[in-house]
Image (cartoon, rainbow, N blue to C red; front, side, top):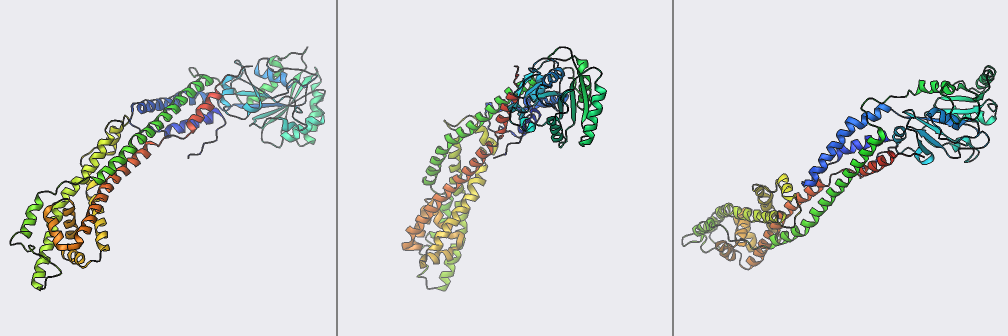
Length: 528
């Protein structure tokens, strides 16, 4: 089974889906398969022409995490950066017990199956900046005393460690900065509620502390004390924070005519679900084909194996009259009783010539029987009760071509017959059987028994005189070998059918339906 690719964002999900679309096939030749293939091609085209462009226009969303002590204004800053009041604010007690992700709906949709969906409340803001996802991590001590353990285990692009002018010296702030500095993400210390004119002294003190702590990579930003207690600060109040973020994560503009991501993903999800359903229908059709034909094929295989062969071709009659007629060399033959060396040699030459003539005359009849067996199976496949598309399937595999009988049921079947009969003759140690085999040679002896098994009277009478008591057991071997050869012809055709069904089962893995369900989840609008 194909392993499912790891995909956590909508962009990764779309990429996985696009790869699946290249792999999926609907080879079962039914009308529904044609429709499904058209849907697959259309979805692949939509992904290439629209969806990928919409995703690329926004780029990789920047996850901007706000961390810091309770009551320092993280939620106010989150609201101010996103441009709307959504996070609850309080200067006295924790107002955000659970992390919140504030972003434009398309930016949230791009998060796909990201872990942030499981550990944060998603808040969509239609006027929010594209490409920025503001993660208000809330109360750092709500889940314990370790601030980092309280933050969601997500892929963060940048950290904003928020404090206030009154609390920037708290040890918790500096412990937090030290922990964050161990990672590669950019960090800014945002000092909120800075009184007018106090920033020079505060910034000088903080810079000294940062240098002493070895935190030179931490940027230092301020937010001036606002009048009252607004939920959203004026754009100018957070200008320094926005500039710092924009320099690292530019806000993209949606190109004209570019579809909204969440709507595009919803449409793709619906189409992918329909395609996954079509895949299931295709698999059910393959199962129906197998179920409808297996039993019938088994029946016809058995019937073909047990069928009574028709009489051998009339061409055998002339061959045998020349040998067993009044003046023929085989009129009265007893290989073991012949004492004359000249007589033995004459009979042996006649038997060898007869063996070649019989072989040439019998093979077309034998091949006809093998071809009839194959034709009977094709008749079953094309008969009532076989699912739609089977005839097309047979034609595609070449099973409906009359000439295939020569390859499928002729030489191969004849070879199996000869090998089977010779194996039985070699197992017999009777002197008459050995003498007849030596005289007739391998081909002649097999052809003689074959002609008798096919119902030719002359070869039957001669074989009875030639083999004596051994004739009936050898003839029984011939009948069994012929039955097995007919069954082998059926098995050859069955092998082709089995390969065909296996080919029909080549469809996409379960990733198709999985990606569709995840895309549908990613595209949901999650307004609070």
